[in-house]
Image 1: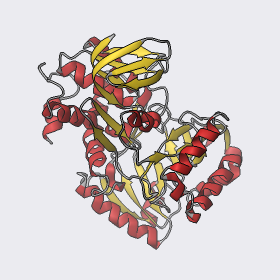
Image 2: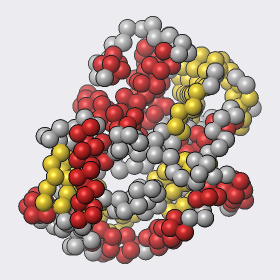
Image 3: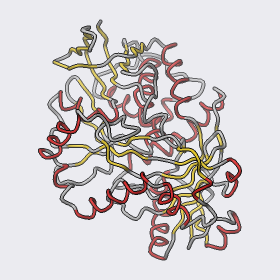
Image 4: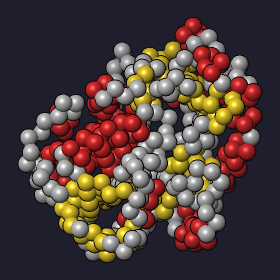
Length: 425
């Protein structure tokens, strides 16, 4: 088999790229996915929140902030046309003390820089928040009325159908054994030739990039985020999404939040439990991976991170919250005092994030793009990646067009997205 462009990874990013390429060009496009469907992992194992970029530093995360801002209306229109759940629930980001309040003041400025308006964001006092949500107790908070909840798995599935209608081919249940030159060798002993490859493999993207001889100075770690579902009798304790200001912004440990999903169910979480693999949704992963991951850590940039005492202390706390539901609920009690462990009877959907670590042992804040003569690698594509996928992928396709890799020779028409409008902003 031979294709002009091969995309590795049928998640939300790989699928949106396939849509743009197939609808705007005559290139022969193929998506290789090791699972039996699109969006099998991080793209559907998330909270479903459509994030507004008020909490993203425009200097450190400007690219993904812009994409998230642009993509909000794109996803909303797409969801409406395809009858996919969309809930305009809003988000309150709360501060628990004056120090965190100062962070909110900074967020307010970031939000305006990232395109939001005073209509979208309001800094509220404790009394104003209590008036809106009587069961939320805090020092202050930012209310973002624009935030919504949807189902990114369903969005990706519909987008795959759109891509197929434009000629993109999806190869499911195909595992890659190795890549050499311009040839992909599959586990079933078949091979695929390509002119250009786009690496959107999520938690596996760094390993694939290294097969091309790039990104060798980076390493990664995998963190599972776990949630608990609240009993339906208590879902209306709070009707808005509630996030707390992160206490450790240099580490991928998310402070707890209360999330209302598009189907109406409510969950609390997450923690960030280190695991061995990108798909370790229970336990730590395959035991056979321990030695290889340990060797990778000791020879890579992760080694410096593991010498950081604060990081190791935080890891131990995350393990405790994984083992104890009460520990997780007590985190939420800080801002919703009425919650009790017995209100939560089922675990929610677990997901795994794979942040990238640079040579100094620090986590990369922004998505990493590395292009070679025959490939483009998108690494560290984490939250709010699902939110920003339509606009971010459009900009990637424009970049490939500008460099002469792809030729956009179809009339850019879509009933739900306008490519020219996106790339011109």
